[in-house]
Length: 579
Image 1 (cartoon, helix red, strand yellow):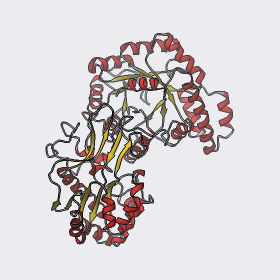
Image 2 (image 1 turned 180 degrees about the horizontal axis):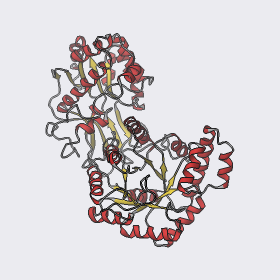
Image 3 (image 1 turned 120 degrees about the vertical axis):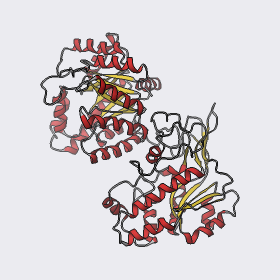
Image 4 (image 1 turned 30 degrees about the vertical axis):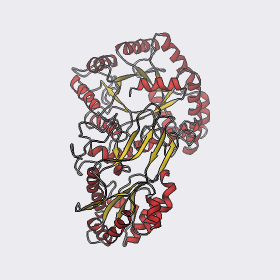
């Protein structure tokens, strides 16, 4: 979705929106930490994020990689920065091609700063001299595929402080094809609003997004103001200077000052969107959003189009059906299906062609280091110890399992006691959902899809079962004609009472003026593909321990002999508990 379309929606709805900026870290661990933070900040509900351009070598490649990951795996609409610095036409075209293939539809076109070793900015041979030239090239090459943003400077920039000349340059960028403006950071709100009015007086009518820099420490606040030539209001200097050696107090007072500035911007009626320079941190930005009452809450739940997080990778925007098995491993599912030529839309096709990707792709195996995982899950010596790990996960004292990358959600609250009981009895649950019948699509826990709709889901349970219990479990399940099961071990021995290999919807929704939507299914071929991954994850867990340790032997033994079982239809958990 284009940024300009999001801004138009915000203006029409009267509900202010916001976005976040990130930059490429310099270390591999920093990259992974940022991905985890981006994943968590998705829950704050940004309209989009943008990722700055890492000029030169590996950092440039990393920008492209981060755009691809954000779009495809995290479902974050992403705007990629692109600069003219050290970029010939060929490199620019390669970057644009990468963004296109990632499903990205937004570019922030900038001239860029000079390299650190250079005193002033000089165009690269065969490259572009000005941002307007880059805008023109993108528009000429890709038509309207990309929404193109450009920079605005309410207080001047490094090599130009003539405000009228800067407005002339801004008009030239807009005339070349720019569709939105993102400003440099500032704290003088009155000057910014006056600048907006001068921009409009020049006949520039595209949306303007103010750049907001939250305050973390006094030293970083002063340093950034000096670097960006941002003027500091006297009131801010007085309040922050008096507590400059107390980082916690600076963050608290700074949050109030920045929030007050944002309110004045939004109350002006000229601006409907705020863009936060996060500096790859979450706390200060979240504090400002909380102060503005903009973060999702029970009164303002985060709306989602489907019960699972959508991928925005190329060709995936219309995807609306997935197997439930990857409910807690969204990134893995995206990675294993990234080479498909088309994705299910409206119905589930034949998952045998094309096949699911191999298990050696990046991001499919167990996350974290061996040391970290041993600390997280301890060193189990018995099945009772393993049961306690699963119970701790359900009780939220452990935030992940090998098969569930994130903490358990509030959806499980209504069946949590049943799940705990099953685990204590040696039936280890790795996926589940309660039955839901006709809940409003706006429900903060179960809701999804357009407003004024109703959503439904069948009870579903997936668990690891000992070979000593599998026959008795199957015998009891088969007594109920409304229950369907699949059971398979690592060797691929499949037991099932399903009438066919075809898909069986386990969630669906009914919405005004639309056909019934069935976004989550159970299906044999995809379950066998998931089986390989599920047992691989268990073996990865075992290999966190030394070869001769009791923990490794215990978990490896489970993976070699136990069954992965899923049971569907209503009242599944009640049936199991009563038996």
